[in-house]
Image (cartoon, rainbow, N blue to C red; front, side, top):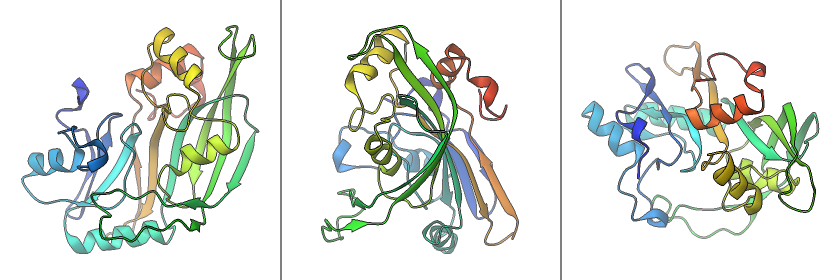
Length: 253
C-alpha cells in the first residue's frame, strides 16, 4: 500500500522537457512482474496527475526514496538517458549502515545484471559481470548499548554515497560486500539489525535515499541541481542519533 503522504506526488522540478519527483519509500517506479500485486506506481500516478505520457530516464528501487527524473517527450528521454549512461550525472545518496565504516572508500567491484522481467523482457539473460563503482564518505557514526548480534554494543555509520555506475541494487550490493549492509535492506542486509530498527525504533523502511542529482540540462545548458527532502521516518533516525546537524538543511524534512 502506498504511504499516506504520497498522494499527490511531490514534484520538486518541472519544465517543458523534464519533471522530477521525490519518490517515497515503498512506491514502485513502474509496474513490475516481481511485485505484480502492487497496483500503485510513480509513472502511472504522474501521468494521471499531468494528463500526458511521461518517460522513464532512470530508476530507484521500490524501498529507496528520493529524486527521480522523468522526461516529457521521447527526445528529452533519450538525451537524459544518454547523460546517465555517459556518467554526466552526479548522484548523491544517503545511507545508514551497520558498523563503523572507513572515513571514505571506493568500491570497484563488478556486478552481474539483475533485470526487470517486465521492462527488460526483450533482453537476453546476461550473467557476465559488468563494471560497477561506488564511492562513499562517512558523515557520522554512533554506538548503541544494545546486544543485537554477537556484540554487546551495536555500531552504525551515516554515509554519503556516490555511485559512478548504475547497476541494479548497486549501492546495496556493494555496501554488503564491504560488510556494511544498509539498515532495512531485506534482501542484502542484516535481518537482526533490521528487526531492531523496525520493532524498537519505529523504522520499517530501507535507510537509503537519493538526496541529490546534478546534471547539465540538455536544452537549457545550465547545471540543474535537484534535491529531495528526507521523510519523517528517516529524519527521526537522524535526530535520534544526533546526525541531522551534519546535513544540509534542504535534505532534512
